[in-house]
Length: 480
Image (tube, rainbow, N blue to C red):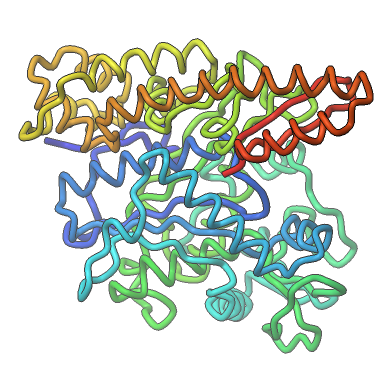
């Protein structure tokens, strides 16, 4: 069976041929850990988890390596840690733990589930701050190749210099836009020390509460990396060096990996800049052979934003009544995400979640063990992760055991009791909490503060966090 994937770079479906079938390698841009991940962040996590499972099925679990990075150095992180009065590491460790808890509930494979003692890791989650030295080494290499320069304690990548370097792609080839189009459509940092408006930062000086490391290129002031260089460094460290490539290897063929994934919003500038850095550092025509991007997510037919009040996190969906008046089981969120093909925009609706839960309850009834993974599902996935066709096939499978085995392969729990229990507990809890909130509102209106305090303590016993909003309404969520 031929695996076919849509390549953003060529805008076509291509037959997938790994660089080395014994070491299939995939890199996906992961979270920036400064706050709870929103439901849009869950889409690439789920999509590429399914692809990881498929690659393991096709090539063997010991022959696939998946790197999903963690950005833990970023100005948003610095500012949030300063706001809370905690260290940057305390913030990022706590936020990453929250993220892991959330995506485990979505059925996403984790390193501790797949890695085996004595073998190369099959899944890694590199943190940016653990790869500062690799970033600095890449920066030094780019300076030596004449495509990066030092200006006012910054190191910048020169897009014009890249255009004069042979053997590397044209800047803008992934986005398929000219320099003028990219400049017109981008929010470009204006700085007097830039040689050209399109040049981007590889390294910058640190001040105040910003984290800093000894700088490359002879710069005296401590600094920190720009956003784009981190992924080039982590891909090098995790997907090239363990397999004979990397900074000590001059063979371009060894410095290319198979698949790079992420959200469609990352095509430009992030992925375009990753390609520029990696290809210029290693003199390669491509960074990865296939580029895959998932589409945008909107909520109830509107763009998700805090200003519209429809911004929702994975945690809120799992553990509060914010969306649809109830909490949702992780299996429901996972299947709802897969109902739409990954490259298409997805509309996240209460109706879709409700229908998805009903479907799962039917599938989970009387699901015995001992079945086989359905070949029709594998065939559909092999056509550029055609998950709508997968769902259609799941409805057609006659054997409950085969459907259960297939659902397990796809990352579902097959736990009807948990799914029913979550729904029942959520509804019962909602009714109890709503009743207490009505009583609390009445007590506050009557200035009966002892009764208000008693109800507050009762809500706390139920592990409920209550927020009194400026418009006079009250919202609540389950504290996890």
